[in-house]
Amino acid sequence: MTVPYEYDAENQNVTVRPSGILGLADIVDYIDRLRNDPNIGTVRNEIVHFEEVTDFTITYSEIKSVLEAYEGIVRQKGLEKTIFVAPQDLQYGIARMVGGIFGERFTTRAVRSIDEASSLLEEPGA
Image 1 (cartoon, rainbow, N blue to C red):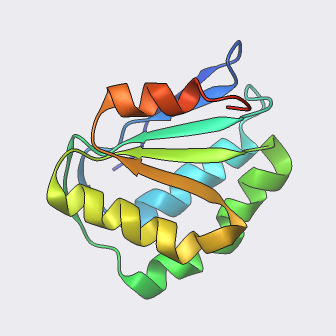
Image 2 (tube, one colour; image 1 turned 180 degrees about the horizontal axis):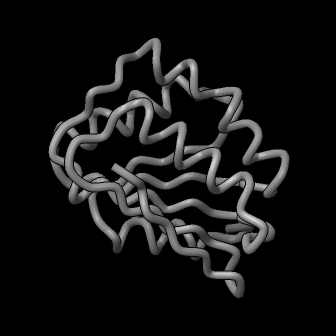
């Protein structure tokens, strides 16, 4: 599955909307496309909507393997924060696990609603 994304140049946000079953190949492909997309400038915030994801086929160790590729987005695009919108327990748990793995290297937040995500975008420095 190709993970679609949209870029809001004015606010420097990327909105990501995976759906169905999400696996390592999908995530790596998304990161590579975003990192190499000449139409995308600075990205301050990445908002990942897990609402339509029905299952995850990615393991803990596979998530760790994505760190280097993700760091490429941080360096090349200036990414400051990733917000996962994850209303269901499985989605929220995966989002929290990603945040734990990424640790202090990257700023990630897991929220249950778009309203919570919006409030994080309104924080100073967001």
